[in-house]
Length: 314
Image 1: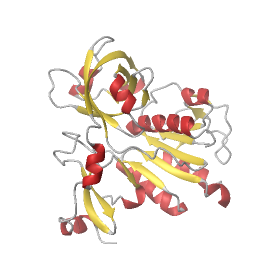
Image 2: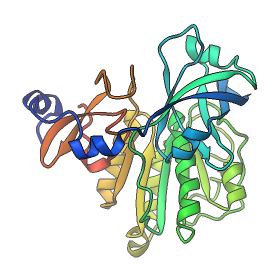
Image 3: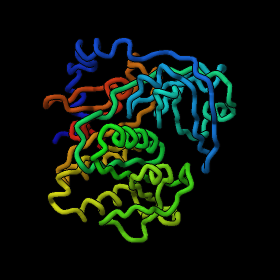
Image 4: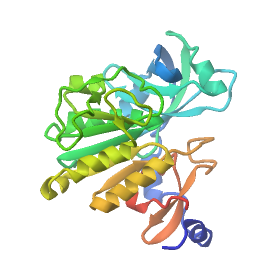
């Protein structure tokens, strides 16, 4: 395979934008909504879970999509944030963020009742139906939130599926882990830390970190996933499909994991964004389209792509 950078330069004539049919299908799918803060709960590691009342966006939201929000009226440039959970009936949306920059530190000061301007939902979501029996979901760091939304969706639309969610973090998790009461064959017996919400849903989850957190797998979340996959029979492994969101090195490792075990895989990519609605084309990535490399915008052509088509930089 040629180096992506070289191929991309030669692929300048390839389409950057989706087809006309795709563009028409998405027209009117993004709305500007004045939301109201319901809660803005601080968690370990400077993280916050923000819940807002935004009924129109909540009704439209799909797992894997994101919002572009105004952290504070004094800051014109919005910040893209993944949708963690969306309750269409109740009209609320939850996001997880870390207060580490000027904008997110101001966002952390928002109180219940405050107004918050949202633009969304944006982007191509994860697949919404036709799941295999054993979906394996991997979330790393700020890539954890969309995986929680996806596992909730799978739980709703595919009750016969048996998903497993593995999460990795090098800072304290934004929840208090608890020992899992759900057995996951193939994993080390001492890897028992789980997310309480998923335990309540009776969906198995496991945590990974190199920080020595109790009950966690001591290593990368992709190593934890590989351990589980290796322990499956060939027949059980044929029932697996992968979904992942996280930093680029992690997603590259997930891509390799999917190729190693010949499994279908969808990746939600993380890129810096300015407009987040496809106008600036500042978040483009190289994607294989029918054997040719094309530049696709992560914001509206993604963020979810078929792992086999993604060409990460060398």
